[in-house]
Length: 364
Image 1: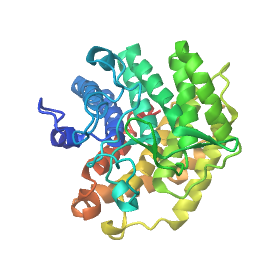
Image 2: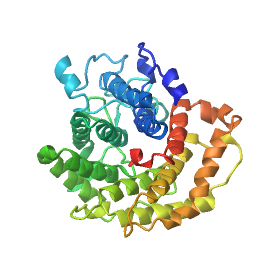
Image 3: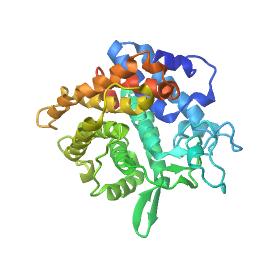
Image 4: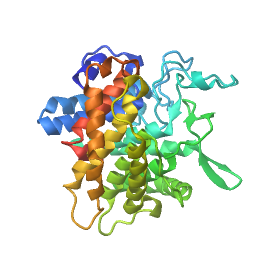
């Protein structure tokens, strides 16, 4: 994390606008807060808050190569700073978004900017952790405003609801029309959390929650994708922490159901996972995302009260997290192109999985 801080300019006053990336920075914020707690080092707490500001200053504004300039939300500077997430945040890709009217290029699209809803949900969690760590309600309000911007990803077709996977920076048009596998689930969980954190925004949040609930109804979230399983495990942790006497969660966000889907996914993945091998055939951030989910939920197990989820089966899979972490900690594997080509996201996700063993609730 120290190297990430230096490499991306967070430790200096010179801002590299091309080194902010929403997904990576979301996990970096949580990991920095976790380091502050685990090591009793307040400097990491300050870095986490500095990173929040840097992300808003950079990804809350149009791409440097976009003909449009200024804040995405179109507000004047003072007001925009007070509502930096109200119209979403950019991904942080190297190239500006695909111009309107230009036919899509599947490979090039991965390098082009825009907005991803599933990145919103990750930044939402980072902002809620900032609210928890500081006691400042503004971070929770920014999280709630961010998730409310997600309504522009939702569309209705022949009476059915769906979500676009990728939108333009100003959220005016879809760039990729397919739907992310777990986007509605993440949206539902974030909206419930936003209602709990900012009840004054119920008028905006309640209809959005109902739309997500409809999209989630009857869904099976089982997946064989390592990163997807890690996300399911983190979702199980979050809803488990929200569940309390007198708290009613929407049925698709039932902790038992999410844990069952997570466990089935783990069982299938463990059967096909091959330990060792060449790092060129493995992707660090996807595997470390799984290790993060395993570590966070397993470490939180001892903090949970009796009568909640039966997480004992996790003991059988925790060795998988150890294998993944040991593999990617090896210096020779960090020289592979699959590591260096995605250095920031690989390094942060690996760090997050390590920190989760000591501070699991920062990812909850």
